[in-house]
Length: 289
Image (tube, rainbow, N blue to C red; front, side, top):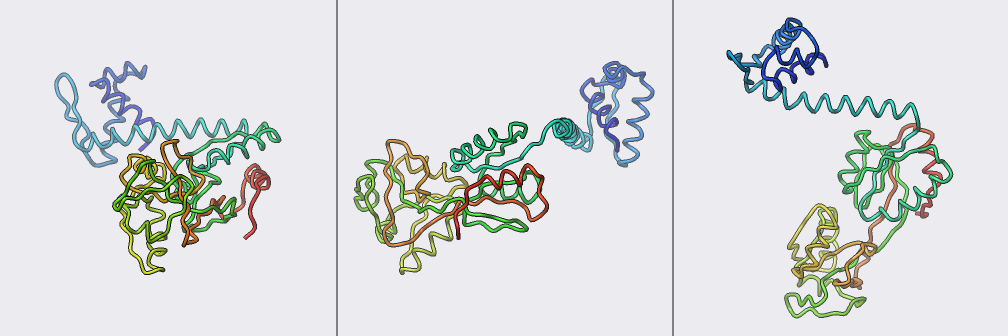
């Protein structure tokens, strides 16, 4: 199956006839018909119902039409990236939402030293960026613990505590009323509807179990920002990193009787890195273990 066959196939589908496709492709009709015949023979399927006025797609044809669009788009993106790579070095970097501010400062400082190096920034959750890193879609990324990585190296950028976050005026199940900046215990939290991102679920449950308590995980979500948004509605208490920016309508409480922490890591694959990525890593400021 050749790229040109997919291009001809899509033209036939979009024009409705082989003659119309040939006109758009600036070709004569026989070569287009021949390539469609060869494509069907190679795949051993019928792609078209050939009517008197306009062709229609078989189920197999519909699948190929949908897939061929993605293939041709990816080919175009690849061509552009190859051309761009020949013109300048590019670092493909992943950044989690809570590390955008910190990483933008590193990128700004690095760009002043290396103005010829470009950045392609991928934003996403820790789990999405982990997958992109392991699949070689990005060169380097920030991640939050707890996380398990395969074939990657990491260094810690910062460690911070997890805190309880609730809407101002949130009364909770048993009349929970505290001022912003107050402390809260696990026992108090065990009586509340908790809102967690999936990454912290087992970690939080273990902390409660360690002191003989259970907890009510009322909402679970993929992203910490979603957990914060739900908490802002006044329907529960979210447990989030202290650095998360909260609105003026929310309060943050330190957790007194558990050392709940999360780390921001910089991660990259265990292989020889491009020179520009190595240079970027050297400019980072890491915490000692």
